[in-house]
Picture 1: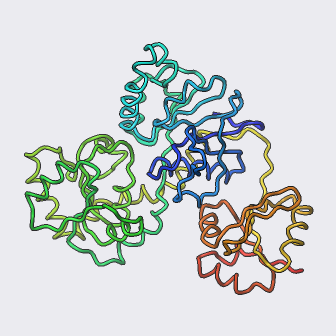
Picture 2: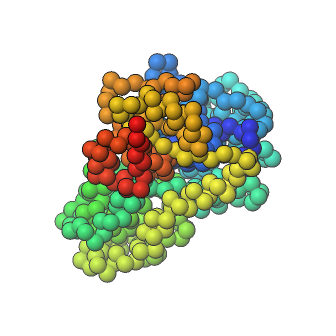
Picture 3: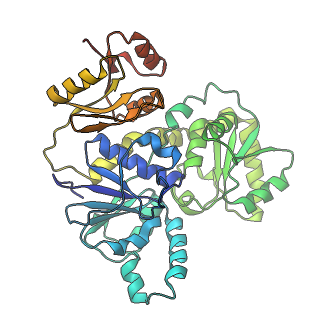
Amino acid sequence: MDIYENTSIFIACPPSVASGGPELLYQLCSELRRRDLPAYMFFPYLQKGKSPVHANYVKYHVPYVEAVVDKPENILVLPETQSEYYGSVRHIRKIFWWLSVDNYLTHLGELFQFFFTDLTQVNLQRQVYLLTPDAQMEHWVQSEYARQYVQLNQVPERQIYFVGDYLRTSEHLGGTLEHTERQDVIVYNPAKGLEFTQQIMQAAPDLKWQPIKDMTPQQVQAALAQAKVYIDFGNHPGQDRIPREAAVAGCCIITGWRGSAANDIDIPIPQKYKFADKSDSIPAIIACIRECLSAYAVHIADFAEYRQMILGQRAKFRADVAAALPDKAQRQHRQHVVLGRGAHLGALLTALLKEREDLSIDGIWADDSQYTNVECEGHDIPVWSLSDVVFLYREERIQYILLEREEQEKGAMLSQAGIPQQALGWLSW
């Protein structure tokens, strides 16, 4: 779907929710902002007096709007859990992003119950997206499982684009394989396929089982980096996050055949590690687990292809988005920089905003909670912490951090946080 000079992109997202789907929506907005495109998060259901941005995603520093501008030059991205907003717009071009097939079906069931007494079937069809043919809409699929589902529902191939996602933890976890002492532990997610998993656990009470429950993201990563096996007999509604985190952290992966696990594109592991979630499969599953524990060094090699796929997903995500949303405008791209809060901040900021059209001053670095946004030359510039600056640099949203010459200690702080010297600029005053 082409982006024009006057195109704005709105990305619908459930407010104040933290999970894999919403984070991917923020990642998309961040990627589009990286490309200097006017992209905004859009929260259809705002609660008055409450920020719709979950605390986990404040770090992306992307703007949000309370209403969509319903014009044909604009684009609205609708995840499958926002299908009821489909009928609320008439002119804007739409992208329906299939982050999860299963969640779409569950959401439809909830909508049917909600609308049943108020709407006829015809009205429901107009209000909620039910795979209705629509020449003004394209479909993005996050998984091969979703692509197959959309094709089976007769969406034309020309309207389907693969736009997956990536794990922000993959680079960190990717180095744990050779550097962590492994334990004979099997990790599982109790939120998925628990009934069958409990049957497996009951059949092998001598093994050590570790549920991923009530953990911070850091604790999840630590658990996966020490375990030898991760099992998942859930429904696999798409390319799920935890199986990929487990694989790239160095776990042997054992799954069922449900959802995206049924194909060798979303979860490209040998079939000997996939089992039907039936009671007569349990002896073979336990035998496979014991083999992985006792001969870990041998079995982990079988997951090298899966690990490499996951580690390459960030670059692929950017290529997927660029292919699905080509920019047709002659857009001026500027260097995005952060300015340190130095003694001459006001004068430097004024000079840079007036004289350097090749720069975009995106933020000011100041670890001071009392320091609010800075207004200068008609610009309202946000103030960011050190962690903000490091995160946005790694997201490639900013290219340089500009400091005054006397702020050598700040340069040392940035270097310790992983910002390379070539990203630091020094200003004299």
